[in-house]
Image (spheres, one colour):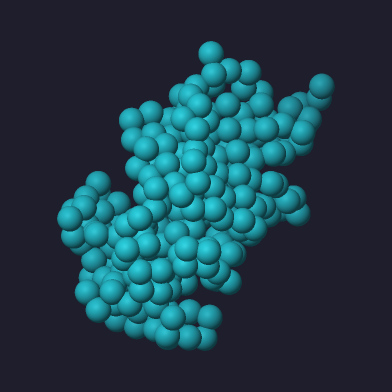
Length: 250
């Protein structure tokens, strides 16, 4: 094996880890971001399916594909509301798994030559934990210690959108853009640390669809500057999810 081949292999493994982290960021938007100013939040909640429907969410199963650098990777995700999340993605003949709960996170990624479960690093776990709340990160935001401020209006994809600043109880902050007509989230900007490098991640959400229960979700989620796109093909709500899916293999 030449030095060049070793370098290429290490570079590829680094990208795979980054894509797994970004998948967590992207999928955060599958259900909703609740918004600021009570009137905007109320309209957003209605657009997402209504308070009763969001409050009634207990679980979710999702499947689709993640596109990156010319590759299309199948992904699946199971979530039990505020309890556990399992993300799977297939690449180069390997099935890779990430699991997170409120207290622990682990991964088993053969693509990175892992032969046994590994403890999830703090940054990845911080990103992935946001997926545990299927009702939306900002649903009931006041009682969850969040502060949201209206910064004004902006334009996203040629349409007016409300620009909102969201500060989390854990010190995180983001900028969210809610479409002025549909009141659905169409863009979000987050500053994150990826593999030791601070960067701004911009997420665009489009092609909203609804489940049979009337809950809206973005069918397409794109992210820059990395260039990752997730297409959601199937979403099922409140179906039984086995606890064994989240158990760490021995």
